[in-house]
Length: 529
Ligand code: MSP
Image (cartoon, protein in one colour):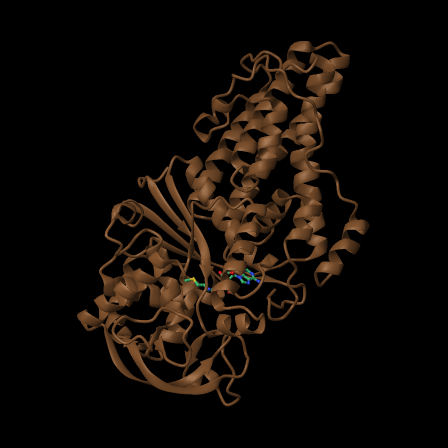
């Protein structure tokens, strides 16, 4: 366990400009897994997500829908909350950039930085990409005048604008990177340094006057705060920064808090360059980690995205496979930090191999043998007599250690893999012990030992997997009737306390999927076979 006892976990706030698709849910599932893991390890966690509700793009969308921008974002924000509920995202606070408290925070920050001289009035001219809400230089848009991020055409814009004194902070930023190697993965950070910092970072234009759906600055209300500055400040406005009540800031943005922020690689630039600079300008501490994650791609390597229309809603998948199977697939199949394809074949194979054949099958085999041979009562624990049992338990304990060390490094993909490896020890153990033969041969003590050990394995594996699959692991522990106090990580190694528990009726945790049927269902939703 780390030394810090409070932990602040954030996701980017999602653009309130359409529906949440499966690609978006990836980030929140990973963040939720981290938040649940930290809670399990005894941290006081605050987990935050929300919606990014200002900007020209949203204003246009509202107009198209025949609604006022506020009516439009209200509808979208409630649809987002429904998706997060369906995905079992355990956020503690949902921030909206239209919240009065957020707007007030943005205005106060602006005034503060203007008074400090880190914001100044100037004139902006440059290439602007409306869908990305970003300005670019000649070199970045190239001869074709295309946005370097989304490859759509950009247009020239010129307006009176306020600027953030970014250049001044660059040396401190580079020093900060040097001194905090765990701030962001080296390759992801180097990409930012080489693409944006080395060629020379300009001061950032942080107001707009060409539209009005945003936070007006107090000093000059025809200026609206640039949506990215508005959005980034959510991470502290949600803790009451500049509200007059510092209690949450002290607790979750203090020096002893572990601050873990997730962001997709497409928005890395804002989180590893401008966000630390804003914090420096405000005299606030930097986050411990920006965990830059990869993107879900189609089989042909295209990003799943709203504008490309290739990204399914999560609902049909949740309905057919259950939310935990979907969460597990995302965490386990795609190496956290790397891009990965979401393909029907991999989806079905992963669910069958890990959930139906490994986890589900171990629960099913163990509990049905407890029913068959011991009338549903877990045998009394005795110190193991078989070297095979001792060896299996030893291996299980080291898998727990390895799991913790991976999860502490936020390698949730390999962490989930370790939990599966722990459960897989069960099949091998059954093959070696052959409890059905022990029953036939009347070797009751050894049979008791075997089933008892398998029950412990199910308990341990379920605890480790609970941050990824909170519902299914609870179901497994309920089927085994494990007392509440033995479900905590703290008690995971307390072997010996399941004696004489009466297990509950059995129903398969994860049905084995028929590949052909599922592929025909899935290929209608998603590209690939
Ligand atoms: N509003 C900004 C974030 C502001 S945070 C101060 C934004 N919103 S978004 O709705 O476009 O994206 C939200 C998150 O979803 C981002 O982390 C983004 O990387 C992620 N994803 C969007 N499509 C994705 C995939 N296809 N795959 C994985 N994550 C994806 O950016």
